[in-house]
Image (cartoon, rainbow, N blue to C red; front, side, top):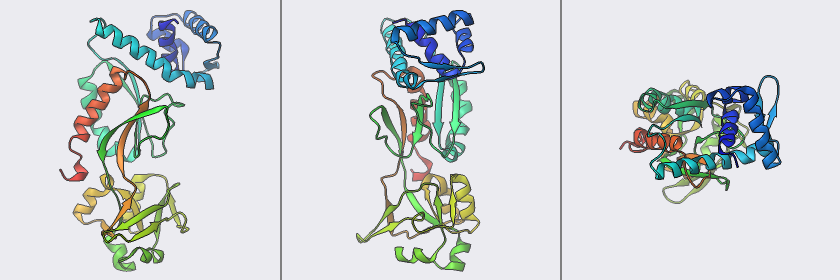
Amino acid sequence: MDIEAIRLFVAASEKRNISAAGRDLGLAPAVASARLAKLETTLQADLLHRSTRKVTLSQEGAAFLPYAREILAQEAAGRAALGLGSAVVTGTLRFTASSTFAQLYIAPLVPVFLATHPGIHLDLRFSDIPFDLIEGSYDLALRNMAPAENSLKSRKLADDQRVLCASPGYLAEKGTPRVPEDLANHQLIAFREQKARQLVGRDGTEARYDPVGAGSRLVIDDGHSQKVITLAGAGISMNSLWSVHEELAAGSLVRVLPDFDIHDQSALWLVYPKAHVLSAKVRTFIDFLLTEIGANPPWLGN
């Protein structure tokens, strides 16, 4: 199989443009198109859907992409074992994460990473609605749970904790819940498609927290906006500790039902397509995040 054609396919899937991918590899547009067509003939599959404006991955192309990346990673590892190739890590890294977490912890580190690794280009997608790694051709994602899919692997970035909280003003007006049953008399702020959680008391008491099922009047899909609305006194919300630890310390938010833990084994995971060899650009970014964030998560008070 033609390694350079595979390299061209991966580049085209990232840029959504065959001509642009070809130029990056020193190929004329006609040569690039012919080379990709030959690869598709070899594989007996249409890897890309072409239009006059852009190309998109076909279903077969999306399935083949992680293996194509693995082939390139294996090739780079083999060359490195022989002392070949550049010592400078290069390539475009497509990374997705929650916009709320990214604004607080990742965006401020981007200039440092780019200055330290001049050969790496970052293509960042920050949204509280998660993207599909394989379909979106992402190299790496930040998730709040380990992946269940066999096609993905993960590395834990840091521990986390979910907490219920409200503003002092809201609690002064509506009263402070003492037991989970008191939540029925309160305005619960629900995150979009939020699943019910189990509350476990220090004495072993169990209860259920389900604002969506309880018919919450307020549903939202952005974590930062949820925190702002909670600060403004709209009700009680469930938040990751990394999002609200400063407000809790300052007293602008108060933890609700502090004797109950939300039983969901919260943690932050770096997730990537399964491969025998992790590409240098992905490994470099993972190591960077582990050093800058995972070694001393500020929300855990280390």
